[in-house]
Length: 119
Image (cartoon, rainbow, N blue to C red; front, side, top):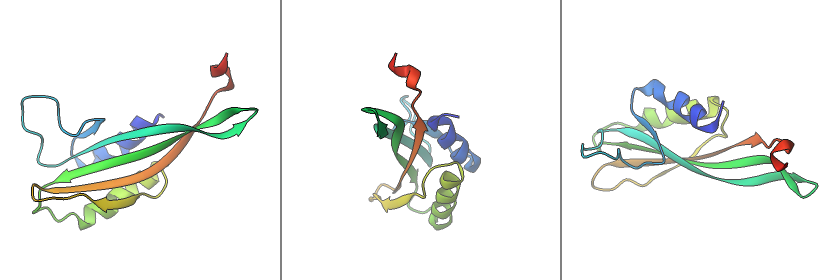
């Protein structure tokens, strides 16, 4: 299972939209009241013979919700679900403002790089 599927499967259990690489739906409709979005960057890891044997993913998951939403339990549940999907235990920071809550989770994972990819 790929990284996108791991994240989506972990978070869809909450019933909120989960989007990759977007901070809001790209339509003329207003964004949902609460939703998740995520993105990541990658770099090579576990080098041997001048080539990486793993691809390391640095993941940021964003949870947007109204200021009135009690997010304490959801923050804990989100961390547990992301960790349970095979990611590292997430760190968390609030980027909330007067428009609403914006919770950012940061975690990592890695995937093997197939040596045949170099051919």
